[in-house]
Image (cartoon, rainbow over all chains, first blue to last red):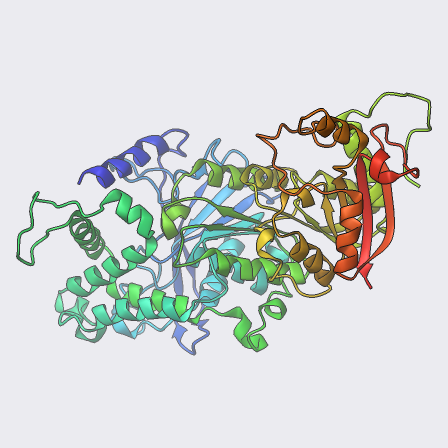
Length: 388
Length: 212
């Protein structure tokens, strides 16, 4: 039962070495309206972000870290006087770590539509004085990248040495190379895909339906009623979590272990896996915003750069000038290696620089967040060769 | 052609490093400058590095071994980690000028398929391999042992090689597969070309292949 708890504790302990230390989020305000790809409009945009390391005089050592579905701007380091507040990619980012903050100036950002401080459904709409809630327009990966480019302008970063991300974060990195080819020197796309498969969209739809059908959802205006669609969020996270792990790993960690030692012949928790999923669901529902979850899964579903090129990914990737590192994990069935290879083959067809590593790791999609030695060695090797 | 040491100046077998250099030089000699190649079983990418430095040749390496992939990335080589025994299905027809297998064909299972695939994705294939019928190897077999020689340096129990073939065998297979031999070269362990009975006197064989 305590296996996974112990695992997380270990990760936290290990990652406290070479930490960037105490960090604090910053804010940036873009005071002009933003026209969104889906036709929506935001009167202004505020972004919350963090930085680690120092921007060099040539302003050539900046690396943007893009977050995935449930991530945010707090990539590395800890918050003052807050236990267990390590950033979500603290094992990767820090002095002497693969994404070395002694060499690079690393930027983490919370995307618009998020629930961690950037303009999103929980923000007050300046035009109405009320929370956006369900009125927050749908945003796309391309919208996120555009907003990120304004932050880059604000930080006087003309060109990213690299844009890096896993899963949905990898999609943003790819989008950077297409929207701003001249501003993106390297793309590191991990456990990513050029578009979601039908199965992937199906999982997202189940998650959305869980939220949308929660009686506390109130058409997305739950905040005005002082409630949270906890049950929906919980279910959404539970189904998501199943897809982030591999069958093997789940069997290895939980098997058919019983929580109470014997079958209960009731609908209470029998198996450890049930306990684990409920815990993950509860934890998530306690802090994540349902509207953000909904719109983020839609951004995932909609991402498909090849769509504008009759489905031809090779043509779609033609504008990219960046060098690419593409990484996948053998046991990742949510964003399988085959999806990463699609990106790789399209880039090769365009004779772009690309390296592709397929990492043996039993942890499924979530492998990209772990510190598998070979995985980190690959990232370190690639990042070391990037001129800062 | 290649920078082979003049006969007699240093009558010792080439060191492993010199042999690699010789191997690279033969291959480089067969590829015009600026071409775009695919190196299958590229190891740590040294051949691609050599081709890039000496002849501005671009391309990708393909490798399955994790450590080799890591070394490629360290070396700044564009390496693709896939198992070519499963074919080259993701690669478009004719996307390369040359597909190369440098001393790695003997480590691959699906020999026929790979040769066919090389000539699908590239106009020419360049293959080098150790000749199992080389005199020293024959002598080892005659003495009752599996051969261990300069170009077959492994004991039978730890060899990565899974296909053991000779110059004569390879040419027969090319004939059967309708593959045209455009150029060939056999060399001895001194780095000298062998013309007299290459299947007996050649330790290493090089082929430039095309579709007939």
